[in-house]
Length: 84
Image (tube, rainbow, N blue to C red; front, side):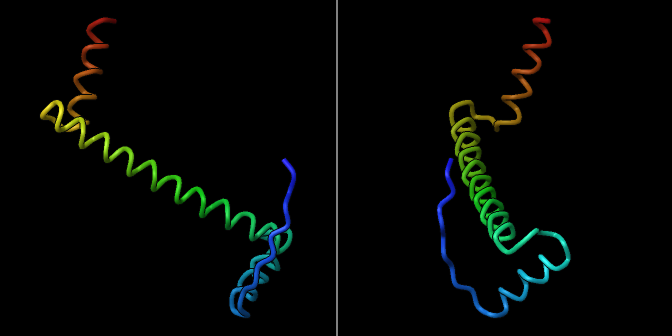
């Protein structure tokens, strides 16, 4: 995977905050800071999407089985334990 150039503009306050983190040794340079910030934000949105999917599955399970997802999972575990 090749790296692509992404030019951004930030205000003085944000640049100061980035530089403080770099100066503290938390990041090697501004680029590393920005890369990590982007990764963290993408992870956050991925978790939110997964959470919404899980909520949808839980709601569908409750409708289909007239129980919540936890109850269905507990029943499945009990059935597996009986088979063992």
